[in-house]
Image (cartoon, rainbow, N blue to C red):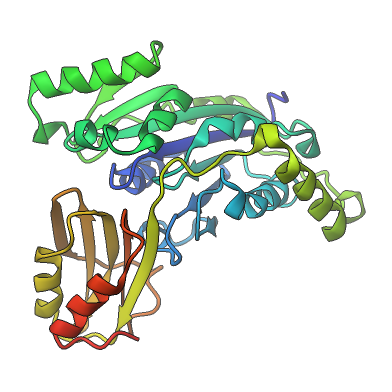
Length: 333
C-alpha cells in the first residue's frame, strides 16, 4: 500500500446509531488544510442524510437505493472509488455506510488492483446504539456483520442506559470481535482530533498525476465491474430482508403526521425525513420505539416544496402506512 495515498475511514453502524452525527463532528474537527471527501450510502431510495451534512462547501458523493457492499449498487461503488482514486484524489475519504450494510468485504474492494494501490489505509469505526442494541442484535444479522468488520467501537447514547446494560453490550461485541476497543459517549461526542493523523503524516496533498488518456474508458471500467460482480468470493448478500419506501406530500399542518408517527406499525425499524410548516423546516427521526420532530435548517436542503419521509421496515408492505396518511386527510404524491 502507498503511505502517501488516500486514507479511508469507514463509519458503520445499524440504522439510527448516530453515524451522520459522528460524521458532522469529524468534519468540524478535521484540519482545515486536509483535502477531504465524503461518500455517503443510504439504503432508502431517496437521500435524507446528505442534507444533514452541515458543511455546504464539502465535496460529497451519494449512493442510494441499497448497500454499496451488495450487488444491487456495488457497481456504482466501484466506479465511484475509481473516480475518487484518479480524478478527485483527496487525502482522506470518509465512507458512511448504510445502516443495514455488511461491510466485511470493504478491504477487498478498496485494495483491488484496478486502483493501483491508491488507497493507502483503512480504519473502521462502528457506532453502537446502546439504548436499542441488545434488542436489535437478536433480530438483525447486519449488526453481527458490522461488529465482525470493525476495529473501533463507539458506544453511543450512554445517557439512556445503566452500567449493567453497558457491560452486556460490550460482552456481546467482544464475543464476535475479541480485539474490540471501546469509546463511550452521548450524541457521538467523541474526541476525533486524532482520527485524521495518519492522513496528515502523508504528503500535504496527493499529486495529481493521472492523465485523461491513462484512465480506463467507460467500457473498460464496466468490464472491470462485471468481473468483480461475477466473482463469487466477492459477493455479499444483504444480511437482512428489509423494504424501504418513501412518502411525499405537499406541506401543510404537521399535526396529522404526528398522529401517524404516534401509531406506526411496530416493525418500522427506521424512518427519517423532512417536514415543512409555515416556512419552518423540521427533521423527523424515528429509531426503535421513539421519534422526534425538531426544527432543522441546512443549506443542502433545497426542495422545501414537498414533505418526504423514508420508511424502512420488516414487512414487505407499504399499503398500511400509506392508508394512515389517507386517514389523516393527507394526499400522497
